[in-house]
Structure formats: structure tokens, C-alpha cells
Length: 68
Ligand SMILES: [Ca+2]
Image: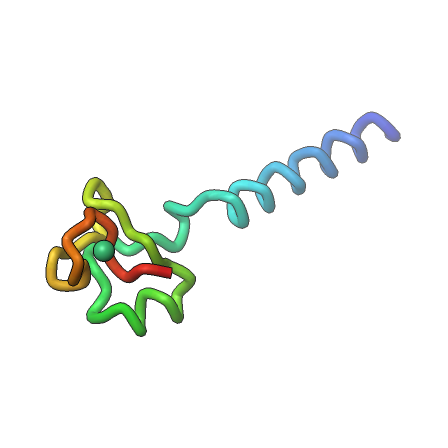
């Protein structure tokens, strides 16, 4: 019984951990409309290898869009 509860807690924490820690969880597959929208969603300094990157949002062309 105790073992069963312990496993349930571990499973619940695992699910929550993935939901909170996984950046891909809320990660759209296309760039944001603009940096205001990106930052509102918690994204900034978006690297060129991210599907969220778009050159028009990287004004200084340093490889990071929507600087923090
Ligand atoms: Ca930049």
C-alpha cells in the first residue's frame, strides 16, 4: 500500500516535471507575430536554430531574435 502510494507520487511528479520543465511543451512551431508576443509567452534571445527564430526579429543580426 505504502509502496503503491509512493509510486503514484513519483509518477505524478514526473508528469508535472515534464509539463513545467519541457520548453517544447508550449513551444509553437512557427515564429511569434512579434517580439512583444514572444516575450509575453516567456520567450526571448531566440537562437537561429529555433523554429521560433525569424531574421526580422533579430535587428542586430547577432543570431538571437527578441533580445531579453
Ligand atoms: Ca539579435
